[in-house]
Image (cartoon, rainbow, N blue to C red; front, side, top):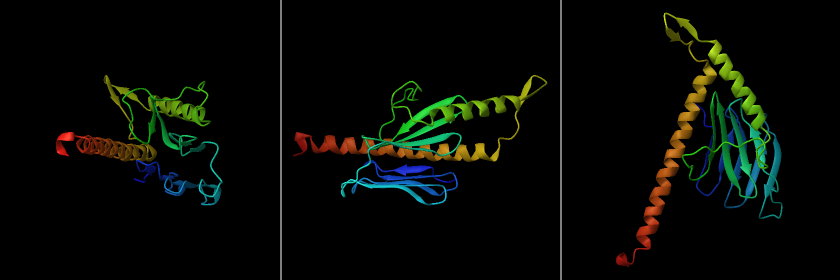
Length: 184
């Protein structure tokens, strides 16, 4: 599968369209970023160091299940997932094991939330309609290619999240061992 996005612990990274085409890139060290359209044309560019900072959040609807937001002023990458009844917001850094989805009435909700909700609900209805009850068993049609690709993307996201959590734990361990007076 293709990588949807990848960000380092410092907040620098990139985001891709489903085609694999780059849609967003940010370098945290220099504070520079670029947004691209699906044809690879630059639609927005900024540089904190050159006195041209980004003032508003960048929001990109990647497909019918994924939306990306680079939240300002926090400079926090966020991935919004809406698939059937699953709604989750992933953030760069620690992702608490609790409900994180934005509500449309929240002041900081991304503009694409409603579109993700609608397309995901339509997909859930199509999935329910595809079930065929025979002999008391539910027979499901083979998931479409898009669903299989989404499963692969979710696997990539789980891997990245797991690696980030492992890195967080390792860094905390290093910090606590460096602050231990018995080892000085």
